Every structure is written in structure tokens, then in C-alpha cells.
Image (cartoon, rainbow, N blue to C red; front, side, top):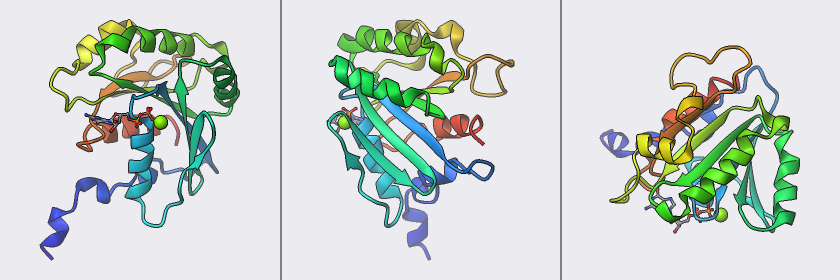
Length: 197
Ligand SMILES: Nc1nc2c(ncn2[C@@H]2O[C@H](COP(=O)(O)OP(=O)(O)O)[C@@H](O)[C@H]2O)c(=O)[nH]1
Ligand SMILES: [Mg+2]
């Protein structure tokens, strides 16, 4: 029996179980962020958490993973206009957006801020909840949540980790995480799922 206690907590709580889609037939979640933020790593982690899950499908600018009635599509932001047009087509179909940021990359935080602003101000998706994951906090000089919010200029539009925002206000919040250490993102998924069920 003792081996059970040695299994990582995440083994019991796979990604799909966060999104108990009982009231909805299916849901589409977008992972977006600059390249190198950790999207592919998170996608792999989600896949490996589930026994017998399929391989993600690779497209030139995106990856897609279907888990039951949940579809997760990952897109790299920044760069080519053509890629941008492709992921913009996915916007209107998405039920939730997870925006990943490398919290240890001070050099590219302004670039990430510009992409996030573009996303937040897009009227087509003005009511889709956005979970921002500040990844790689296992790194020594990673930003903490307060600094990341400041750098992204979103302190005042974050809607909080508990309770619900007022009617008509889009849920948006930052959760710091380390995909490597399997830490932090679970709380973010839980927060996001409360707007999907
Ligand atoms: N230190 C650290 N590195 C990470 C973490 N998550 C991803 N990485 C690394 O960041 C790099 C980019 O990750 P990747 O998933 O390819 O990013 P993508 O371009 O957004 O798909 C890879 O070298 C990963 O191993 C993390 O939690 N901590
Ligand atoms: Mg990738």
C-alpha cells in the first residue's frame, strides 16, 4: 500500500478532472503565449497525466490535444502575420484562454505584455475568461506575482482568485507556477473551471 503515498498528487487529479464538463457537451481551451513560455511542456504534462491519451496533433504553428470532450490547442504568439490570422480564427470558438508567460524572462516581458494587451482588447473575445500562468518560478530570478502583474500592467483588471466578478466583467487572473515542479497551475485550472461548468 505504501507506494500509493509516493505517487505525485497530480496523478490523482488529471487535467480533465478539473474541467467537469457535465453541463456542457464540449469545451475548447486555447494555450497561447510567446514561444518558449512552456506551452508544449504543459501540453505534454497534461497528456502524460492521463493513461492512454492520444499524441497531440502537430500543425505548422499549433498543437492540438483532444481529451474526451475537451480540446486543447496551443499557439505560439509573436512573429508571423499568417500564424496570427490562424489563431485569431480560433478565438471565437474558445471557451477559455490560458496565457503562458516565462516569468524568468525579463527581456521578453514587454513583448508578452503587448501580446496580452492585444488579446484583452479584442472585442470578439471580450467575455472569454483568461487565466495567466506565470511559469518557471523554480528559476532563481523569476518574477513574483506582484512584479509580474506590474510589468504586464494588469494589476487593476485582475478579478481575484475567489468569488466571481460582477456581471459583464471578464474573469482574468494570474497564477504563478512551475510546470517542471508540477506546482501552481492546478489552482489556476480550478479557478478557470469555475467559469466553464
Ligand atoms: N525552469 C523551467 N523551465 C521550463 C518550465 N516549463 C518549460 N520549461 C522549459 O522552457 C523551454 C520552452 O518550453 P516549451 O514548452 O517548448 O515552450 P513553448 O514554446 O511555449 O511551447 C523548454 O526548454 C522547457 O524545458 C518550468 O516550469 N521551469
Ligand atoms: Mg511549443
